[in-house]
Length: 280
Ligand SMILES: NC(=O)c1ccc[n+]([C@@H]2O[C@H](COP(=O)([O-])OP(=O)(O)OC[C@H]3O[C@@H](n4cnc5c(N)ncnc54)[C@H](OP(=O)(O)O)[C@@H]3O)[C@@H](O)[C@H]2O)c1
Image (cartoon, rainbow, N blue to C red; front, side):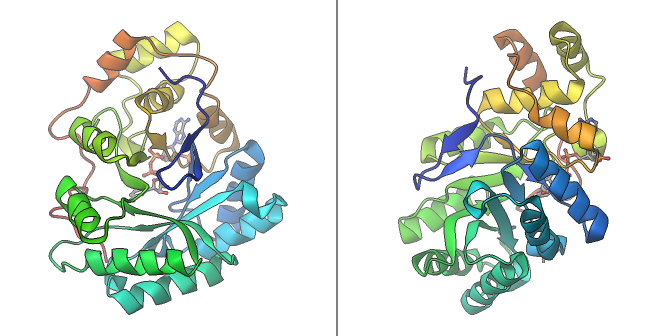
C-alpha cells in the first residue's frame, strides 16, 4: 500500500503530485477565484484543456496565487480538431500564450478520435514540442491499449500518463494493468463519478463511518491506494480541502476490494468510450 505517497516519479523522471485539481467547467472571475483557492489549499497539479476555454483563467490563478512557477504543474490538452501536426504545434504555442507560461508542464492529446486517425501526428507534434522545450512532459488521454501501443511502437516514446475515466462504478482494471505493464501513470477524470457519485453505496459509506471521513474522501483515498492520480473538481473551498486531505488514513484490502467491486457494465459516464466517442 502506498499510503504516504504524495507524488509519483513519471517515466521522464519528472514528479507528478498524487492528487490534482480538475478545472472543468470553471471559467471567468468565479473560476479564477476557485482556482486560486485550490492553489492556496495546496493543489500543485492543475488540469485544463483547450476545450475547457479556461487556460487564461488557469494562468491568471497561478499568478494571483503568488506561487513560484516551478511549484505548480499545469496540464493542458490538444483538441481533436487540432491533431494535424502543424495545427497541434500551433495549438500548444497558443495554449502556452493563454496560460502565460514559457513551457507547458504536461501536455496531453485530449481524445484519440480514431475515425480521423490523426492521433499519431498529434503525438509526433507533442514530441517535437518537447524537443523544442515548449512542453516538459507528454502524455495522452482517453487512449485504449491499441492507441497506446501504436504511438509507442511508432516513436519509441511512452506517454508519461494516460488520463482516463476512472471511479468506483468504472474501475478500469484492464487499462490500469496495461498502464502498469507499459510504465504509464494513470490519471483519473471524474474521479468521484461527477453527478453519479457512489457516496451512498455501502462499501463507501461504511468505510467513511469506519475512518471518520467523508464518502468523497473514501473514494479519493481508493484512487491513491490504486496508484491513480485523481483530478477532483470543486468550486467549494471546504470540499477542495477535504479532497486533498486523504493521507491521514488507509483503507483495508477488504474495503479496497469492496469499492472496486462496485464497478458495473453501465458504469461509464455518458460519451466516455474512446472507440466510439469523438471530441473535437
Ligand atoms: N480527459 C477528459 O476527457 C476529461 C473528461 C472529464 C473531466 N476531465 C477532468 O477531470 C476533472 C474532474 O472531473 P469532473 O469534474 O467530471 O468530476 P468529479 O471531479 O468527479 O466531480 C465533480 C463534482 O463533484 C462535486 N464535488 C467535488 N468534491 C466533492 C465532495 N468532497 N463532496 C461532494 N461533492 C463534491 C463538485 O461540486 P462543487 O464544485 O460544487 O463542489 C462537482 O459537481 C475535470 O474538472 C477535468 O479537469 C477530463
